[in-house]
Image 1 (cartoon, helix red, strand yellow):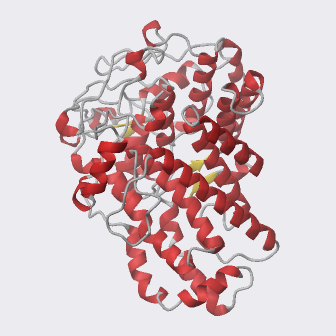
Image 2 (tube, rainbow, N blue to C red):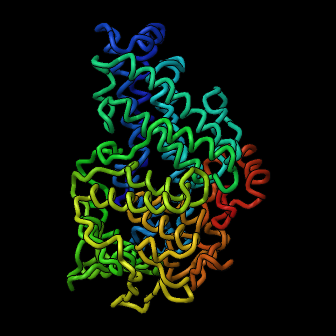
Image 3 (cartoon, rainbow, N blue to C red):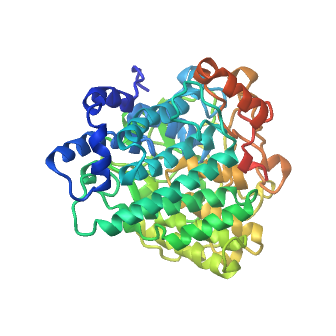
Length: 538
């Protein structure tokens, strides 16, 4: 990983345009009420506001090479079972549960602090009104969801009030407030879409996801709401069921044409894997995909020098990238211009499959199976591969065999929970059906590691191989449970690996009273890797 000065691009943009924006506030409210018929002066203001949005949008899936490595690769994609880092970094790694303490605060500082620098300026300039502000609130939820799902309670409801030290909200309140924000934005953007048909949208050039098509942002917001509602439904059932029902009625991302991606010209996964030799595919991913002869393998990963697909186990102490970053191990197969996934239609079907299976939406097991198969088919279509006989596969994931040290592992052994297959009919109990849904959702969501990490903490699925070496300690963030067997139906197997990241030193220094109150009152007194989040307490 290259050394560089960590700077928040969005903060720099805000400072650069602060003086230019200061004289525009009085006129912006009028423009924001009439977005489809701006005059030349107003269009200039739109451009100045619009330039704040790409910096916020790229926090939904970091594209900058170092940000992506520190956040997506080291944390989300390792704990989500997609990738393994292969750089030794002086023996301090997230995979061995002993990262550099400065690294623990990186996602918070980049996502939370970096986002609000631009968001609060948008709020000021729009006076908290109109379709542009509504759009910014959808992005806010998408980014802050990543933060709260990583750390737990965070400041949310009181952000933007002008105070330097902001109180933390409990996770349930954060989810409720986020869904309220999505509902308000959906209402505002739905009205905007209806009123602006056939007219140009001055935000088009700044919308790097949907090119100004706010009907797709409405679908994205509803899909995000469905994702959140399913996450909390075991503990907040009545509220979550109502949110699911409203999201489905409002229209979801159910076609690959509506998938949300962020463009890249120098894909950070490719750079890390091929230029730096810092990244490989995770052994868990190759074990499942090899055992099922998954047709997405050549899309997701490279072939090794001995003509197979082989990942790397997470958490090998003193790992050498000369070995594990080499040709004996598969790398994520991204091109320089491969876009970064934010949300795909396949996820919608798996969310609906789980909701139907659990009785949160109508349809029961029958509809759950239909949604399950539709999710797989949609994922295959997204990646341009023929599905073949995949839906009828009854084989188990392959046993992982590492030619270098002895890190072999079989996720389908009896000690690890036994058989797990693709065919819906092979899942003979609701527990097995849930595992099938979550496992296929994991495969479809590649490389959204944070989302899979959430599912793993919430359900115990997919069966992610434990770290080879557990170097956790009180000084590195607390002791981590890393059992050798991973049967999700057992107590030892279902409560394991990292459950969250501790709060950053920057919060203890800059917001000490509120972060300490959050730890004491909202996290049960423990700010450690092993502290379960509210929605992960089954």
